[in-house]
Image (cartoon, rainbow, N blue to C red; front, side, top):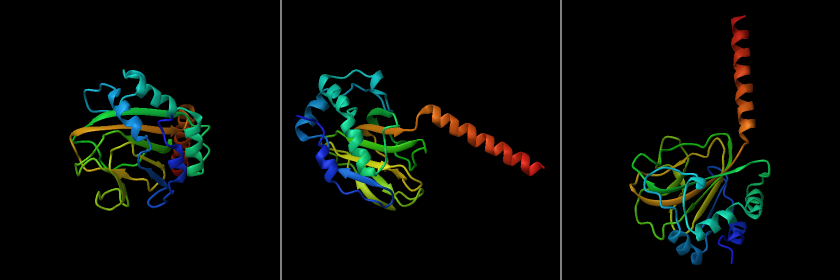
Length: 207
């Protein structure tokens, strides 16, 4: 049986304020959660780590295979109305949150769609609950709050209003982050074009 409930993702309503986003409780099926946690990477410190640099058991490996399956990409593409085929998928894994985490930010423009899955069986803390925010300066001005537990998925399309963050917490907060991103060559090309335009504007101003 599949670990991921793609049908639940298909059914979940797409919300548009403050940005396009979707929340799917138990996206990782309950019967898979225990096995994934048993085989979770043995991370000993805060930070985001690429799967290729970690050791983990077979259930977690099976989860990674499903996340790379084209069916998930296609489902996300339909949900957000964007062709994700040109964009590589990147992942990072996290186990511990520290007090400095969770500051309000927006993802870089190179990210197209961001998705997070949470693996804690329960979550009782006030901190650590991801918020989608109206303001880049006010953590209390939120339109959605996601408890990081029980295989919940939150995915959103990056925009100029996709600010997010969470109140600080120092705890084990298991999560997997996925990003469909612009290819690096394209991103470098955009930077070169931007720099070229800036130089042209500067020379025009001097003239």
